Amino acid sequence: MFEAPIPGQSLTDEPRNYPWERPPEMTHPDDAIMYHIERVSKPETLDNVLYTLEFGMPTRHLAEVMCTSAVSQGIHSVDVSLIITPIIQEYLNATAKQAGIPFKQDFDNKQEAEADIKNKALMLFKKSIKENKDKDEGSQYLESLTDTPKEEPVEEPMEAPMEEEKPQGLMARL
Image 1 (spheres, rainbow, N blue to C red):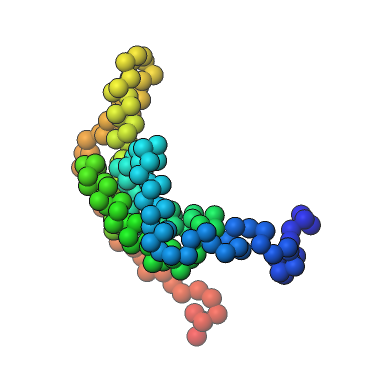
Image 2: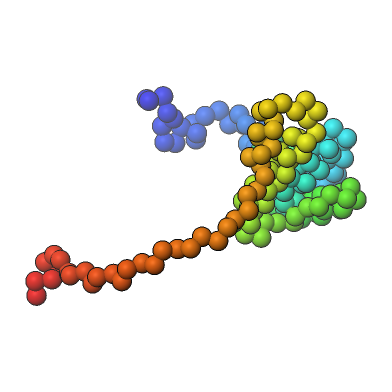
């Protein structure tokens, strides 16, 4: 409980303890763009990036995460990150198009994003169940849970008219 840092302690720490406190490795935006493109283009990275985009992560957010991570590692500065993020996003868009993967550039709204993530997760779950060759009783049960039931119209009961509430409290006495 009492081991938390005191206010201002970071100002008395040894300078340059963290990568972002040192000068960045790359100061020119062109170098930083090439760093990110080369990193994404590696086959072991590319399949994970494409899977992330297919799952529903917007390219704008993925580009921002990539650039923020590079800033925290001391690769380039925040200023360079702000300059190159749209270019990295366009590269991710082009890569996804070339791979034939449906992708989003940004979330339209929060509700749609949450619903889309739930639908993608349900779709991946159904796909994994269908690909499972050893169908036992448990997998059949899970498969039945993922089937969407048909909604039947439900009649709502008529509500009785509400009685008017009498005011209470100090002001009601006037």
